[in-house]
Each structure stands twice: as C-alpha cells, then as structure tokens.
Image: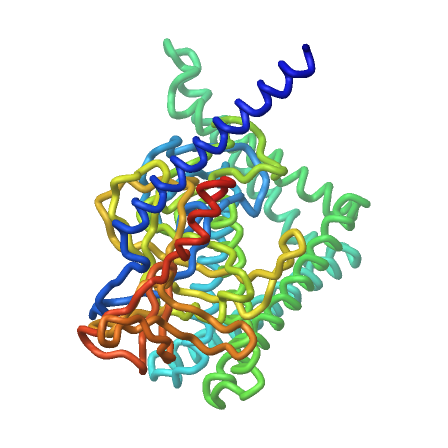
Length: 491
C-alpha cells in the first residue's frame, strides 16, 4: 500500500513540473515573438578622445630647504611658519660682528691698494718733483747739521781728556781777582749803610751778596779745571758722541730715501712695480670677496617668492648645522604633479597634451593642465615598468594644496566630426585582426568589414566601410538559446 502511495505522489510531482515548464515555455515564446531579434543604431558623426589615466598627488612647484653655511649664535629670526616672503628677503642671520669688521678691513685695504696703483700709473706732476727735490735739500742739510754735532761732541771729548791749558787757567785766575775786587767794593758800600734800619734789604746788601756768589763760582770753576775730568764726565762725553753718530747715520739714510724717491719720480714707475701693484689690488679684491662670502654665509635670504613652511631656529641658540634645515620655503602658488604611466601607454603621451585633473578633495572643481615632462628612462615599480610624467595645472580658482591626491586624465589624441560606432556593435576576428559590423541592407543585417581608427572605451572611429546614416545591428541570442536559458536557467 505504501509503495502505491509513493508512485502516485511521484506521478503527481512530475505532472506538476511538466505543466509548469509548459506554461513558462509558452510565456517565453510569446515574449520572444513580441521582441525583435537584433538592436539597431544609426552611424553618427561626433568626436572621439583617446585618454591615458594615472594617479598621483599635487606637489608644490618649488620647495627650498635653507641652512647657514657658517656656525655661530643665532642673532635674528625674522619669519614664522605660514608667513609669505619675497625673493631676496632676509629670513634669519647669525652674529655677524666679526664678519662685518673683516669686510670693513678688506674694503679699506682695497681702497689703499687702488690708490697706490693709481699713483704709480699717473706721471709725476711738477709740484711732486719740486716737493721731492725739497725733501732732498732738507735731508742734505740734516746730514750737514748732524755731522757738525758729531764734530763738536768729539772736540768736547778731546778737550775733556786733555785738561785745561795754561791760558785757560790764567783767564780763570783773572776772573777770580776781578770777582774779589767787586766783593771789596760792594762791602765798602754796604758798610756805609749797615747801621741804618732795614740795611739787610738795601741795594748795597743785595750787591754784596751777588758779588760774593760770583767770587765763589769763579774759585770753584778754577778748582774743577785744575782737578781734570772725572769718569762720569768722560762717560757723558762718549754718550754724546754715540748719539751724534746715530744722528749722522739716520740723516744719511733719510738722504738716500729722499734721493731714491726723486730718482723714481724722474725715471717713472717700472713695469715690475706696476705688476706688483696690480697684483696687490687683485689680492685685496679677493680678500674683500671672501669677506663678503663669509658675511653672506651667516645670513639666510629667500631665493623665491614663497611661504615659510618650517622654522627650525630660535634666537640666541648656537647653530652648528644638523639634520634639519634651518628654514624651509614652499611655493604655494605654482604646483605640479608627477605620475607613473605604464610602458604600454607612455608612447602615446607627449609634452603639451591637455590633461584633466580629478581631485578627491575637490570633486566639483574643473581643473585642467598640460604635460610638461616625460622621463626618458623607466622605473621598475613592483615589477611593472613605468615612466614618470610631469603635469602642471593651469591657473585656477580652486583651492589646490600640496599633498592632495588626484587622477590625471591625459588626452593623447582627439578627432572631431568623424564617423563613429559603439564598440559593442563591432565584431573582431582575433586571428586576422579584421573588424566587422552587421550593416542593415534591405532591412536585413549583413556582415560588413570596416577599417577602424581612433578608439576609446565607448566608441571607435570608422575610416572605411560605412557612410553617414547607415544603420548597423547588434544580433541578439536566437529564440532557441533564449528558450534553453528560460527552461534551464542562466543568462
């Protein structure tokens, strides 16, 4: 009984499935009868652009890291992060006291060297010659005077050694006798008034005192003369002779210098002296340049119009270099973008091609640019050979910022007003490389070979095989294939 029941249930299930399949077949057949077996489209004229896409990030056109080329204490930091600066603007400097003094000394030395060279290069004037002749005359007179002084000192020494002569002693004795007579006369005059009040202040008293002193001096002078010279007097006389000899040598040396100067004026400057003077000027110029370099090495100037993006200095600290730059400047007006283009696509990329930039941060911005550089050498990026391509955005009001990610769509070629067809209507023979479409002829699709031109992801340019207003067809699956799909599933 159970077995009979199982058979009945199986028959019922199979009958239901057959009925359901018949209903689905009839519905599919009716639907297919209502639809055409192919899709048509008219050949149209339009434009086709061929593009190459690559991703990258917006970079500043210039970023400059600045460091001092000297060490020392930081004297001034004149900028802060975010501050715009102009080319040539002073940003910071070290202590430049010593460098400034060295430069000033070099400038003075240069002025002196140039003045000396100018003097040598100019012919002597009449006034210069007269002045030089006068210097010779003065030097000659100085020699004569110093020689006379030497002769006098030598004579004094000889007289001191020889002692006084009888005549000199007789003269001194007579001077003593005369002085004694004068004392007696003065004493007689004083005796007449000595009893008067204030006799000690009278002229007679003064006269007596003076004559007495004169007598004592004459007596002492005679005693010294008769005694002879002592060692101190001899030493003083010899020192006077030595001093006089030194004066003679100096005077003669001055005469030689003055005479040489006069001769040089009269003969003119020699070629050797001019060369030496010119070399000294050049040396002074180099010293000045070196001093200027040393001073500039202690200062940081902005090389470009830019914005300060880093400041790694503090006023008063000692600077000795290091891993970090002192100041970093970034050009936030001009930007560029470097992307990597696959080796298969880079042959289409050329300098000057138009680029459309799509930025994630600025989705609504319409930003264009141009290709400015294509690297001649490749890079291996994860096993893929690629070439660097530089793109410069056009001037835009969009708020571009360094570091923004972007997709560059490079238009490698574009043609306008050409025949084009949708890519899905084209049949390609992979073996021969030929292309075909189903051209509608007398309302019937017929296989037609075409010659393709430029192609992008939607359309292909038709160079031959079709004309304006031709229609082409996209053949759909056959009714049998669609029925099979309806019964057994699938697409």
